[in-house]
Picture 1 (cartoon, rainbow, N blue to C red):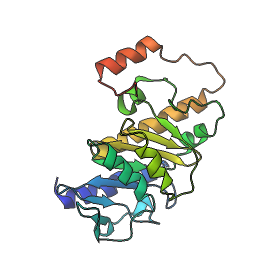
Picture 2: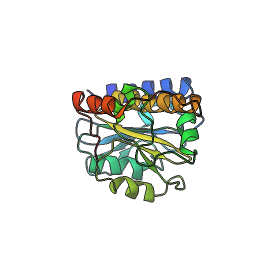
Picture 3: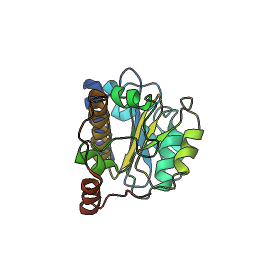
Picture 4: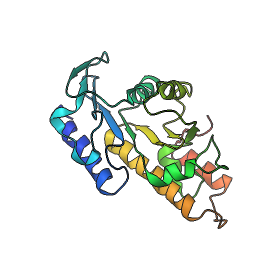
Length: 215
């Protein structure tokens, strides 16, 4: 994809997420690999609803900012995913309401944040790791992701928001929407003893769709 097209696509997808209430105000950030190995990144303090393709932060293949506005303060998160997952072509971070609410619940499984309610979160995300609370912009968030050694495509920052890496920016946006939808289902059915997928059903999904699951 040509860089001009990628710039437009990043802004279109971000605006769609904003318009549907998946991240508000100037929250959230998004990045994608360019054809030459660089990165396009949403600037700091910008709204997903009003990103300007011409002002996206542009990094070269050596990680140096070469054009555009100052990047998001969450660059350590993005860099950690790109450095540890060779398949990562994009990273998206939102402050989506239901996933944040679920992260506050005292009985959530830190190693497998989302309950197995539907097949799609398993297929698109694998196991989601719940990370502790960090101050926004804290480089330790990136170190926590590096500590996973590339074994997770998605993490949930407690009391903050989800972060998802995928092969391209469309796949990353689709996956993080699935994360939020599953968290919403979990909150809607909380305390109602819903029928979840059985371990056998989860195992079948993992096998059929070649999901990274055991790590």
